[in-house]
Every structure is written in structure tokens, then in C-alpha cells.
Image (cartoon, rainbow, N blue to C red; front, side, top):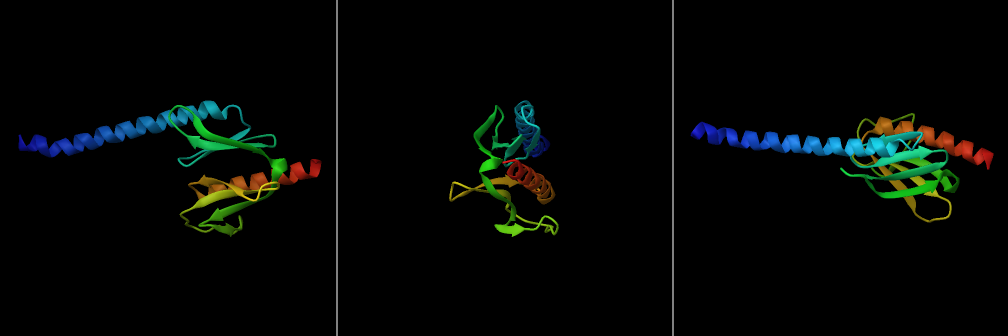
Length: 142
């Protein structure tokens, strides 16, 4: 009897982990369907981001669909910066660690900026470089 009671917390932990894994799988499947409409997209636990032509869309993943979706055109962007712990970072000299990682889009017509959170610095740096090139391309054709 006592051995059964000792194994009970382990059994509960196993079912909790299995449930968390199933929820994350559902989020990834919902993202996969959502991302099909974009040329380039990213998923992580904080945010989803999609790019098609000059339109950028981002929001939060859930098990059913992406929520809090916001979109803007690269034509409305003045600058794109990589932020780590609220400091602008050069994409050629990346820090090893950072708690708050985000891509910041400074919009032309608004005083505020849009920040899209990331979990990994190298992935955020790749997106920064790519979107800066896209921004230059859009500005050159306008």
C-alpha cells in the first residue's frame, strides 16, 4: 500500500506532462495551418510571425488558432531593430544570453513601436537581417 502511495505523485506528474505535450502539439498544428498563407513564418511559445510580400502579421499561438493578430505593411516601417533586454543589438555581435528578446518595428505614422517577442537570439537576428533587407527593397521600389 505504501509503495502505491509513493508512486502516485510520479503518475500524476506523468499525466500532467502528457497533457502539456498534447496542448503544445495542438498549438503547433494550428500554427502549421495558419502559416500556409505566408512566404515566411516563425513559431515559438511567445509569438507567431508571418511575412507575405510587404505585409507583416503577428500574434499569439493557442491550441485552436492564432489570437491577437495584428498586421502592418513594411511601407509603414521606419526602422527594424533587434532588442535584447531592451537594448539595441548589432546582428553581427550577438550576446550569448538575454531574457527579453524582441524584434522592434518603428512605424512612421505612430509614436509607438511594435515589438514581436522571440525565445532565441540567433533566430531573432536572422529575422532582423531578412526583414531589414526586405525593408530596403520596399523603400527602393516606393
